[in-house]
Amino acid sequence: MFWPDLVLMIGLGVLTAGVTGYVIFGPLSFRHLEDRGAEGGLGGSSFAPSYWAFLLRGRYRALADRALDPLATPARIMLWTIAIGTAGTAVGFWLRT
Image (cartoon, rainbow, N blue to C red; front, side, top):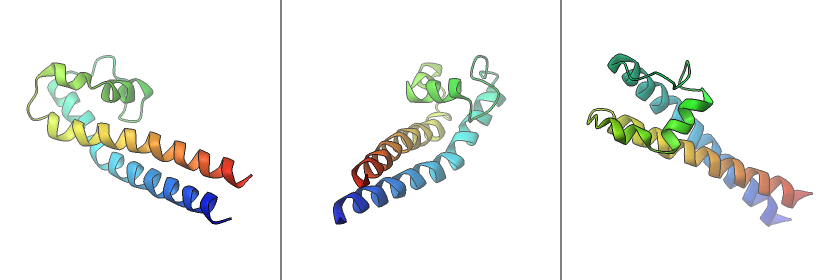
């Protein structure tokens, strides 16, 4: 069938775009937090689940760092893109069965 394959391919495309974008902005924003001394409780890297939760909840806004917002906002958007792409890929696989 055509539709399950289309859903699967779109999900994989969105997932790939999210991962690619996060690999760019995630480490940059984490490094910025390290340089400012605000990395406490965020895990040891930009790929730690606690750091992902920090970004997804938008807690970086409470730091009121104007230089962090242009880095962390795209990283947050890319994490949501990864989540949506993963869900789309899962639905595509489910529809194919």
